[in-house]
Image (cartoon, rainbow, N blue to C red):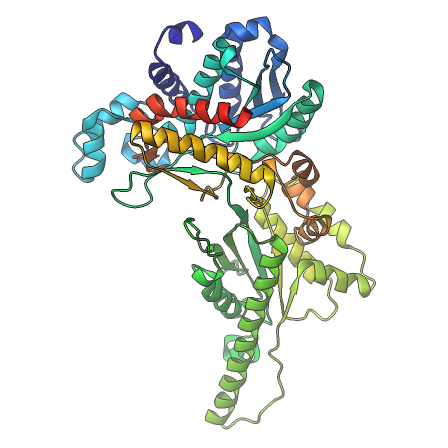
Length: 549
């Protein structure tokens, strides 16, 4: 492939490589991820620099990964022996192509898709873009084979212009960003190894994941100096079953879960308000009861969990807030059931009974402490019984919590709140310290210069608003926060091994200077060639040089 891009202009190199990468299927959780990693490694081997320095290439098989996937590393070492290093990172997996429907066969064929969409009158915006010839279509074109191509071309450029580089470049390509972030989590040990072996000082990491217009006619190019965090708070709701003929004597977990959902789902009051940032409210991703078939007994338990973005809060603070919300929901439920039952017995002229509709709310950590105080020490056994399962990680977490609930001799109705995979820490520049303010000022200076010279409008923001592998390059939580997180995350080391201590030691700021396009994860996905292929590589090189000064 090197001989095919040699001598081409940079924008031509990026487009050619993007097309080659789109051709190869690398859906998350398939062998295609392995094949693409090996193809990228062989491409690096064809670069003259790596023929001279083959030891600077690493194809790392990810430990404990069921699919045996691999990370790819390529180090470009400055001849002046400086320690300062910029990491270029990107993911090479994609989502599937089922959304293409009847044209799934051409999902990886940009030219065929351009022809198809050029007469697609159902979406005039897509049709106009296809007719312009300035957009490249195809699965992964935007998210993010074009980003991989940009990093490849920039590494090749710097390897041929070492005099322009006052530091080192380390390229890192990872699989499985679209699902569980297995690639970058597995890469952390190699980042530490390379840091120690070559005495590297990681100044910052540059991702070039997608950016898109945030509203119609939005022409801003958004540059992010950090990334949002994501939690998956889960609610295991345990009630008291009853026959439908006596439903008011029971505690219906679906009603409690509904109350919790109404208070959390899409609730903008729970969003951290930050001027100029795109911040997103929690979204319910899962809600169902435990019934497997029809009968006339009410459900015994219910499960729900939420996608919860967080920024400057800690997971502990989020958990404390959610406990309060669940307590309010349960108190309202109890008051309403008391009133309804009183009206029911009065309506039917029945003798009143003393019933209790109170529901306890607890975190997993506090519930385990409660069991241990009762002398119940079967917790480790229950977790071990769920090892080596192929079930969905979230389902396993719920099963562990439900097994622990059964250990309670009283079987109290309760809501147990915990976390399940995935967990992504927020990683952002702290402008209050010298390091953060200096890096931000350097990027801002480059953007101001570029805006003056090109007419582009840039907006510098703190948080990449979507999920990013950059979350795993740093963790600034205290030892107490790490302990609390693990105690409220059932079988974390099994379900979602995340080396928080290594992340804390690395502490690498992660910026996103992304390829520009529309409709990521949709069948109309497309990348804008003039900016992404023609302009972006130079912008990333300019930022790289500024950060290394």
